[in-house]
Amino acid sequence: LKRSTVQQLLSSQELDREVLVKGWVRTRRSNKYVAFIAVNDGSVIHNLQVVADAEKFPEDSLKDVATGASVAVRGTLVASQGKGQTVEIQATEITVLGKADPEEYPLQKKGHSLEFLREIAHLRPRTNTFGAVLRVRHALAFAVHEYFNKNGFYYVHTPIITGSDAEGAGQMFRVTTLAPEHPPRTADGSVDFTEDFFGKATNLTVSGQLEGEIAAMALGKVYTFGPTFRAENSNTARHLAEFWMIEPEMAFYELEDNMDLAEDFLKSLVKYALEHCADDLAFLNEQYDKELLGRLNSVVETDFKRLTYTEAIEILKSAKQKFEFPVDWGTDLQSEHERYLVEKHFKKPVILTNYPKEIKAFYMKLDEDGRTVRAMDVLFPGIGEIIGGSQREEDLTKLTTRMAEMHVPTEDLWWYLDLRKFGTAPHSGFGLGFERLVLFVTGMANIRDVIPFPRFPKNAAF
Ligand code: ATP
Ligand code: MG
Ligand code: MG
Ligand code: MG
Image 1 (cartoon, rainbow, N blue to C red):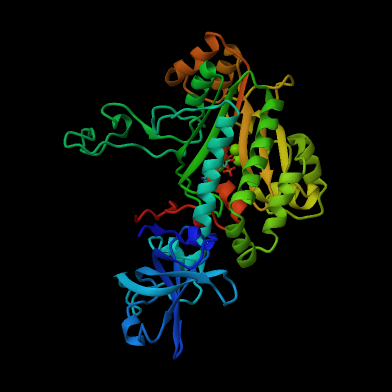
Image 2: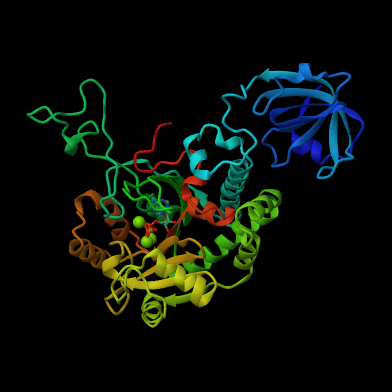
């Protein structure tokens, strides 16, 4: 007899047949006549109810069928009389595959705080909440690839270990060789961090963009989707030290094309989740955030508001709300400002463009006024910045001037400059923080709760 998943059985029309299911016990409750065992195997949020008659399964025979134990159940799939499910299994055989001592297993029936669950990251995927989050995360990752594949983008793999600093932000993790003859030492015996990757200084990537531009300037439309590292010593609910970023890069795209893509892409992803994760999202909506589904639907349906940074500053300066950080033309926006624009002022997602060049990266295309660049940030309700992107500077002279102004060393980026020397062309792209997307779609409040193994200051145990 082949094993069926809970998902298959719950959606099955074929009743009164013998089935085999394997999973983990969520709960067991019994009376004199019968025991009800809720089994979950991760395939869906719902449990499958297993009914064990007391005559065949005396209480004593079920003592190891405890919360957290893994079991194999054979029985007949029948229509259920009970509320909340259409089918159940009338058990003929229950085998405990792996016990879970009720004295020790931490996930007993009572609810647990998200903070506590973070401390048991190895067990939290077995909760309804994290099962739902991980399935939504999977669906969104799949939707990313599907969207790009359908729209003629090629998936390129950019390096994790890199010799360049894409953002000039100084937030990089160093890569050190620990082979016996490495790392290189200075005269006093300490590690020589200027040459630690077999004689070269290297870092973990903060963005695949610069390498993505190489691919775009050959294949036309490309994207990367991989792990990204930033040594942010911050403890916000929006930042991780290791996160996944999706970075499309397109030749012959101007800023407006870039905005159109970002908006269509985000709407398609949210729509995909609404269509494919209905049960998980309904659970999250019920459990954590009663406005979740409404918010997701409204993002799919409404046109994003597009305005310039300069216009946004005017709105923020005349806002009645008191901000922790006051704004003026030239300051970078904090999440409180971004969320004010989205949640209070426009009540819809916002795309802000044409930021002052001083607060943006060296590679962004300079506007005619010489003060702003062709940047765009997409701001989402509850999140603030979800996407950062721009049209890239394609003019060699303007680019090198910007690099000099911003003290970006040109020697390391000679290959990047070559792209402007040989067949340069307008091109654009953006970075979408995958966890911020998952945060938005699941309605969770903290980014540490939407990635299986969060990395944040002092947290990298396993
Ligand atoms: P923020 O202003 O929120 O710090 P950023 O402007 O530094 O973000 P970008 O360099 O523009 O970020 O990166 C592109 C996208 O990557 C951001 O819009 C965001 O969605 C995501 N992102 C950036 N830093 C982090 C981080 N530390 N953890 C998770 N996601 C991040
Ligand atoms: Mg940042
Ligand atoms: Mg930012
Ligand atoms: Mg940004």
